[in-house]
Image 1 (tube, each protein chain N blue to C red):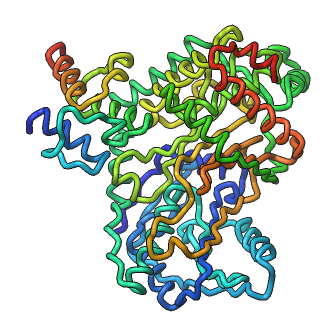
Image 2 (image 1 turned 180 degrees about the vertical axis):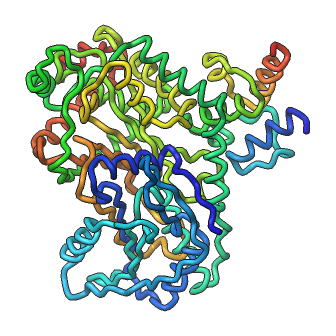
Image 3 (image 1 turned 90 degrees about the horizontal axis):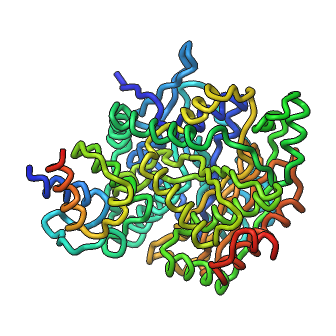
Length: 461
Length: 79
């Protein structure tokens, strides 16, 4: 009989969103990877089928929820579905992208059904490759990159005789290890104490909005509570728009040099920029919380086992305006280092504890901004195909669970990309323009003179 | 298994160096490629594996394999 397992903390996070927003769409993850090269689709199909065998997370299924709403997972031994070929050559590349975007909006519904579908695609301009649509409970973006690299490595092995790719870590073994760690009572008690201590010390968090204090004021009025510290979550209009901004190579280097010279991680520099922006927008509010996503991939097995290992924790800091930029960065770094040490914890339990202590109204939140920083570039490290033009694109699932979600990545030309996903129910492109404009000014005013205080920087920008 | 070997086997899960090739002067970040997240996760694993309590300040000042082993020895003696 197939063994069933509970969900990990990272999987629970997505599962909770599916239940709260009542659609699996919020958990969709889609990507296309295609080369401007006449791929052998028969061989590509064989490689994708092999990948289903090698990468266990692609064979994960979920049971029906039990009476308490808990879902279990199991891994089927063999995947026998077809991998169809979709021909999109009779259109422009933009139209093909739009078509695939529509596929990304589809939901993977049902219990005990596949949560992963793969199509081979023939795209315009001679691009050939595959489109993958998966549930986020099975995989995260790092896991997708490992999968794409592995499929390509299998292809070049059979086509060009390159080395057969090394075995990937067994998903089920790593899952068992994760669940064992999560079940360590001593560890759980330490992690719980860390998060409880933060609440003992700082009290109830305070919402800060991208658009300023008016949002919290409106929520206070609506709830008839002038002391309310959280605001309503948009649950109905989930449509998300995306706005990307590019940072060129030279200014990117300025930020990287600052990080290297002061031993500050880029994540922490970005968190400082965002929290300073929120403070500026909210009349100098000092207590700011930003949700930061981390990918819990540290050991070699964690890197190659697939699975969903990305999990978000609140980065809450209280920084006074007379603190200088560099000291503020170190304050954030200390907070984040502590969080990393306690990142086995289920963040849902942090929110449960806050709600228990402060009677937080149902369906309200303390956070408007979410950050993911991905140090890895989205390029394929395979010498046999490195000079072939590639069309790789991530597709939004079209349903945002967060008001604003910023993904920062490095680009192959040495620059950085800032991708803002925002709920159109409340925000427009102009809000993102302003946010990005101020974020850049805050970061560069701070980096050029780290002795400036946060107040000076907020006044300057 | 000695404490040192057990420690090095744990480190080896994070990098491409075998325990027997692990020199004491190797630095976690610069030589073994640990990110901040890797290092802090590793410290958590150390606590669980060796049943010790690490003080944040002391632990984050550890840079090399030898320094980490010394700290572990001190904690084992104190415990």
